[in-house]
Amino acid sequence: MQLYKDQQLKIYNSLTGEKEVFKTINEGHVGMYVCGPTVYSNVHLGNVRTFMSFDVIFRYLKHLGYKVRYVRNITDAGHLENDADVGEDKITKKARLEQIEPMEVVQRYTVDFHNILNTLNFLPPSIEPTATGHIIEQIELISTIIDNGFGYEVNGSVYFDVHKFNETNDYGKLSKRKLEDLIHNTRELDGQSDKKNPQDFALWKKAEPQHIMRWPSPWGDGFPGWHLECTAMSTKYLGETFDIHGGGMDLKFPHHECEIAQNEAAIGKSPVNYWMHANMLEMNGQRMSKSTGNIINPNELLSGNNDKMSKAYSPSVIRFFMAQSSYRSVLDLTDDGLKASEKGYNRLMEAMALISSLKASGSSSININEWLQKCYDAMNDDFNTPVLIANLFEGAKFINQVKEGSATLTVEDLEILKNSLNTFAFDILGLLKDAEAQSGGDKLAGTVDVLIKLRQEARANKDFALSDQIRDELASIGIVLKDGKDGTTFTVN
Ligand code: AMP
Ligand code: ZN
Image (cartoon, rainbow, N blue to C red; front, side, top):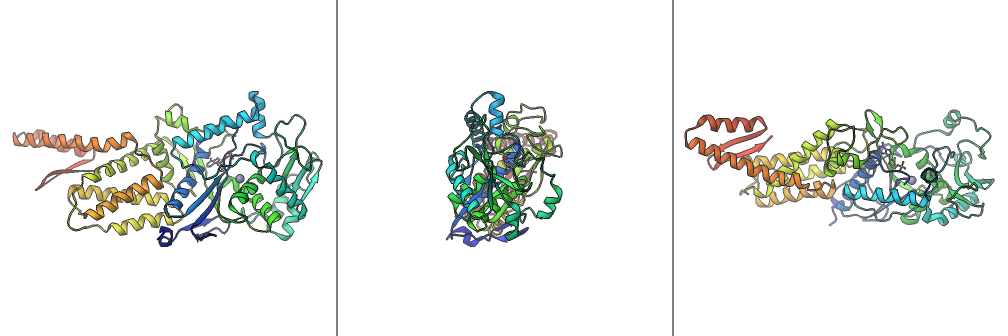
């Protein structure tokens, strides 16, 4: 029996604005596409947040027993500096500035991206296609869109006719925009553009003579528009309509709106059943973004080599910090927030390290299955990781209660508690057993045991001042000793 048959997962669908029961197109299979990075610079932590949200989603879907095909692309051509189809190609510009080949830029930052994601314990996607590897598919798609009357060619470029499309379809349904408002709010064309209307977007751009990244096409040498690659690659690997499409909130418009339009224009079908958007990572209350320079790179945070944070943070602490807020909420990256997450993560790991030393009882005073279902309920509620973490802390509390003797668990329940904590913390949230936190738990237990023995000796010698001092000083740092008939135990508050 697959777990997904027992657990009713609900996903917030950006298209409908509602949490909906997740039903896959093919029983037991999930097709998920997430827009990947444009590899013209190092990824920053904002990018990482979006990809991490989908890493946890991928992990949970797999845990539920789905066979997931997760496609995350690499944008290695076609992404212009400006959403209005003007400006230089981001990769070409970087190549020009650094006087290297565009493919050297792509290689350098793709390697950086993979290294960072590896360090942060991401699972690799099932397929990682590139835009340049799918030029033929994109040209075919453009031809179909032209044949269906939704694209037009001008001077070697091809544009999508948004106004024509909107006569029969609903352009703006994802981002809740109306074409009339867009018309009202866009500046008139300055005469430089070949577009019929400013709202139209490029499917193919003519390459000027100096443009290095160029491919032959029925419309002359050029390169594909940015939105097109995702339509070509998602439908190629996942089908004309697939289950989940994700990306950062900033991609809703125009990128994802244009993807819907391209799909409907070419295939006559809406591409995606569940649109998911991760909210933005901020720093100092401002969105993390390359263009404003308000960024911190993962390596700077991992090494502590930056002027924004007081210390270095481990991959697990970064993951824990991000999981402590819902993927749909804005998250502000602060030193205090990271420090608090580090404490929380260590507390959880320390409790988990104690579990194998717990003594089992004949009966359980805690309903472990009820607790376990609460963990699932959190994740089933649109991947609510902060609520899951609150439940994991409850699990840690059970461990401390059993340790101090105020609660009991049977061997079987102890096993469920241990396996479930491992599954949720390591397999689903992707935390690592940091050597420090792991051995920290063992070392803490060993150290407190030494102090308990010294206290016993002090008492035996009637040195009550010393025995009280040991107890009080431990209590002042949150380690509470409890004397019972079987000896002294401790809890960490
Ligand atoms: P890009 O390489 O600019 O195409 O961005 C890659 C991914 O990172 C996209 O899904 C963006 O939506 C996402 N992204 C960019 N900035 C942020 C941010 N500050 N917080 C969260 N996600 C972001
Ligand atoms: Zn995309």
